[in-house]
Image 1 (cartoon, rainbow, N blue to C red):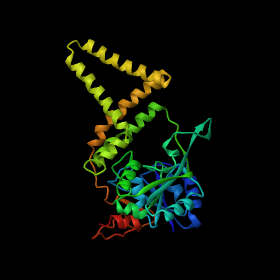
Image 2: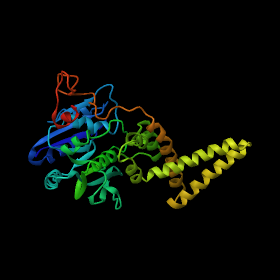
Image 3: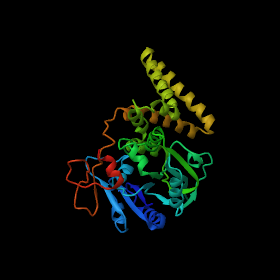
Length: 355
C-alpha cells in the first residue's frame, strides 16, 4: 500500500530540500507521493521544492496560514491509502513508513501510528540531540494524540470528516486525536524513531511575542470554541490540565482588577496588586530555581490566559470546506471538488469533502 507524505511548509527555505530528500527516500519501495503543502511562503521554499519530483500545493485567498490549514491542504490532494504528516524542518527516518504501514495493516482499528520525535537543538553552530526523558513524545503504546505528526489511515480521517481544523492556530493534533478516539479509532506510538526535528532557537520573550502575533497562543480558545457542543467536550476539558491553570490565572487577573476598582486609594490598590504579582513571581522563582525562570513563567501564564478569549471569539470557517488553493503546474486556479463545480477532485481527501 502506498503513502502520501504531506510536508507542511511556511518559509522553510533553509531545510526544505533536506526534508524532501528524506521523505522521498522513506517511501516504502519507492511507491507513493510527496506533497509540499505550503501556507504562503514568501521566501524560496516553492522554488527549491520545484527541483524535486514532488507535488506542490499552496493556499490562495481568502485562506490564511494556521497550524491546522497545512495538513488539511495536503489531505485534499492526497491520492493514497495512508498519509504521513511532516513539518518542513523534519528528517523522516528511512525505515519508519515501512514499519508504520505494517502496523496499520495488522491493526485494523488503528487510525494512526507514530514514533519518537527526536528534537535537535542548535548549540555552538552544531545541532545536538535534546534529551526529553518524560516528554509525551517518548511515551510508547496507546496515546491520545500524535504530536509532531505520524502516519494516518485515510479511511479513519474520512470517517470523521476532515483531517485538521483550518481554524486552529494550535492544538490541531490534539483536536484530531480526540475526534479519532471519539469515533473509536486508536492511536499508537512505536518504540522507534519517526523523525529528527530541527527546532528554532529563539529568545523566550521573543517567542511569546511571536506566538501572539502568529495567533499560536489563541489555539486553546479556538479549540474550546471548536469543541463546544460536541460529545467529547467534557473529555477535552479533562485531558487539557492547562485549562485549569489558565482559569486560575484568569481569576487572579479579575481579582486584581476588582481590587483596583473597589479600593478608593488607587496607589494603595496598585501596591496590593503589585505585591500579589511579586509574591507569585517569588513562589515560582523558588519552584523553578531562579528569578528569571520564575518571572518568565508568570509572564507566559498571563500571555496564554489573555489569548483564550481572543481565540474563542475568533470567526470560524467550516473545517469540512475546501481550502482555497492551487497546485503548481496546474492550469486551474481552483481545485474544488464539490458537486456542480467545474474543477477536479483529487484522491481520498477530495472525496471526503465532496459531500
